[in-house]
Length: 404
Image (cartoon, rainbow, N blue to C red; front, side, top):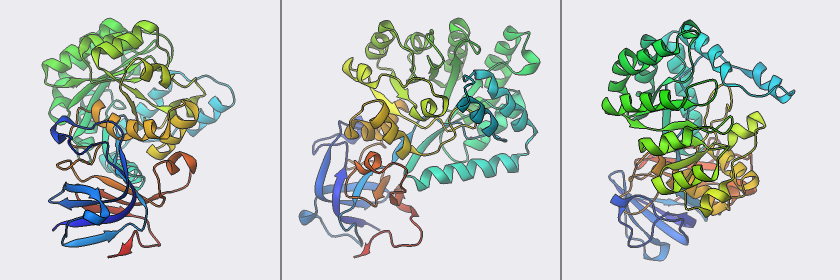
């Protein structure tokens, strides 16, 4: 059944009339007074509402904006427990450190599958209700072969974009044997997780894993058929971005502390810089210099980094607002980074844009323009969400559209 979505106040497509959907998203583009046709889970047509073809079903947006679904390319959703006391301590002046991850490891190991699955489903549901139609999900809170494998299997129940992050931190039982843990990660743990995963990641930071260790993890992952991405340069200057560039990673995530050489490496290697403004909001670290990255020609993505420690938000709209206010992106740049940028960070050509042939993942806002995501921060603006052409969520308590 085909669906015509019409009377769109502003249709953000990230695609021009001659865009090849097989090439993925293009630059930010928006059209006023537009319409869109969905057929068999794909975008079949876009253009002026007055020229829209007939369809089996009609949805009247009554002047609301429609965007591509958000693509959240960095999230840690398989965990148990919570760390609100740690957050409160940070707000009272204690600096953020990577070691807090170990408390989540303890809780996650002790939790049965049902608890992990329920928490995962709840967070994925939160994301969908805020317009996220594609999400990446990491392991990294089990840090044993069994617990990492079950984390990867659970993550695969909600997304094909599963990342094996056994190299998150050293677990307590390997505190004196980092080489032994690296062998475990690159051997039995990787073998157990690879069937459920598409990506491999490493936390390349002081207090976690160094450059040589990170390179070894990524090389082992590639040999097992996984694609590399890196947690890089979050806590201070470090080798993470250079490791990502040398490995041909899809993305280097965080990118808070960058040298000129790091920026050049990102630009020359086409590694996407995934910025996570919710982390800076929740840790009081400095925000990355997004304008510096864009000026150098680096592709920038936005993601939530939803996790129980350094950033417990599932809201891509909040990240868009923070990127506009604190990282000085324009509203167009921020929305592009949260849609098309995330698609590039996941090497996806079917999402992040609404060219004919793209997957019909779209968000209708209860607002006339994409700019309202930053103009009205904290206000629930998602009216309805379509995923692969199916209405997957709509705002409760009121109709999501005018009957056509």
